[in-house]
Length: 332
Ligand SMILES: NC(=O)c1ccc[n+]([C@@H]2O[C@H](COP(=O)([O-])OP(=O)(O)OC[C@H]3O[C@@H](n4cnc5c(N)ncnc54)[C@H](O)[C@@H]3O)[C@@H](O)[C@H]2O)c1
Image (cartoon, rainbow, N blue to C red; front, side, top):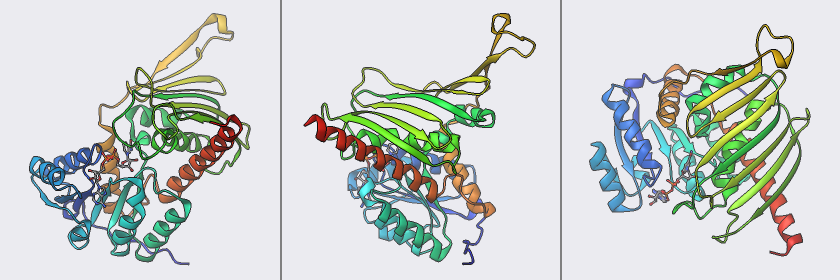
């Protein structure tokens, strides 16, 4: 089937908007407003079902506000959808069917069926569908990515104090999904997962608040991921080993390093070199939105497409299934 692509639009002519301006969406709005001041698009408006929220964010960013996203269907050419996950499919499909380019927050949707509907809607008009897997735009990850060769073993920790948001989803779909996307991206999109083991328990909410997953890939790579939203501190650290180097990536402090045998040393006792990578000072969300708008302008495929979002969701659902089976055995 011939691929249909939306016509290119010069960045200054894009009409941008944000649907859902709660805790994350207001930052999308701030970034679009800042980009508009730099001549990158016209920020036409925000929408939130909460009238006060919509009005306050619009006032702050000098744009119009709406309480029904349908009002933006004919006004925008590029939208961020930052509403709760259960609304992503309906809202995204409506915009995609109109040919409006969409940046949808992660997880892409609740189910694979919803995801496939979104992919089909994008295919009909050729509108771009990008997914907000933000950590790919963290400048520490951007600096590290060219140095990643063949990761073999990951130890990942993502811990935060209890949030007062996103309690409608468990810790796997809320935060572990960032790491599930990252490991598949780093190990290789064509390397299938061969085994999932997982444990997770609700501690404070009625959803899983802390979880650990062990993911094994067909090439033998293994990732051990711990995610918790009932920590006492914020940790977003990934460590992994690949042939000839040990890698540290800290998303929170934007740090990345590779430790290896020093270039002229023939024995570990003769010298280890730690290469601390130079990391650009850029807000990851700005980098993500800029990539979205630039791809529309250039007619390029998005850096995180709907299939990437689907792959991350599928793995997250696989982890949740293993957690459920384990809980049944524990009887909790
Ligand atoms: N990429 C990341 O790092 C990251 C971080 C946080 C949240 N998220 C994702 O962003 C999305 C929103 O999360 P949040 O924490 O900002 O949630 P939130 O509850 O703080 O905000 C959601 C907003 O959407 C509004 N809303 C709900 N239904 C709507 C509708 N039909 N039309 C318009 N507005 C509607 C709500 O009134 C609210 O203001 C979720 O999908 C979440 O998983 C991603």
